[in-house]
Image (cartoon, rainbow, N blue to C red; front, top):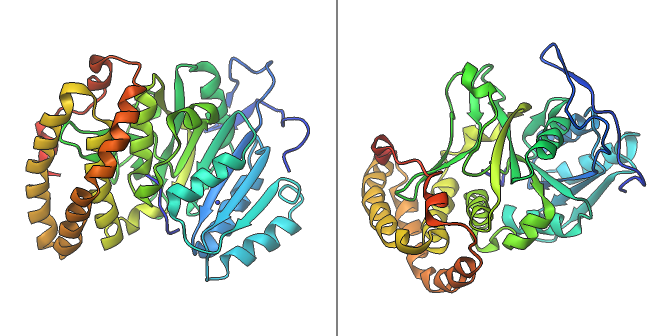
Length: 358
């Protein structure tokens, strides 16, 4: 999921579809086809040295972005100025990097929408300022998009930057109780994680989207501000017929997982879950899902209370309920655009009872 803490196209798209990844030569089956230009959007808020390293990693990509848009949410730590200096001094960044400084922190969702609106390429990638892609990252995502036209979102294999061999996640899961999490977060990498597969939605910390599909789905919901906005967008993409895939060859090393225990994550994450259930859950599923979410929330509230975050959780649910009227208006528009069956939506949910205690 997107992390708010620690975002000029050349005339021709960059070429070169062969790379070395993990010791093996990787040649996508579309190697002879033109490589589409990609805009990479980084939404930065006080990203410190991390966002500078993130830009350096983009400059080292085997497939360079056509454009890099750094949307700065009124940072005050000097990271904006550091990025401007780097972009001016690096020959691989100077002609393709645009810095858009905002006068206030609009949040991850609004910042991402601003970048997507400014992009003019077929694909848009989002990259957190504290996510550091390996050199073949962008090329692997573009290759996956070429062979999976049914999908509009392509998630990376996120590794915990400070814990070698440990996953940060390989995609977002959605549980029938209205809970969401990153699959594999905090566990060692396993052989099965190296196989690409369908996922419910892609984590926006490092993702490639088909830009037109995102615009068709309405972009990120800016009322979310941050946390869970990628699950909501992924849900809405599914409702209009677009899938999501994990791309294990697209590797990033992400720091943000260590900050997810804060009160901001508790508040925004649990508030936004209610809105996602109410807005996106189709047809007859919405009422049983809301009931299951209520039961899940009682358990979660007790656990978070013991961890000292009960007040943030209670405020999140109260504000979620207060916003349900506006959310229900959005629901009518979202569900009016649904093109897929209830079965097709339900089959990608996690139905395990073991998740009820998360």
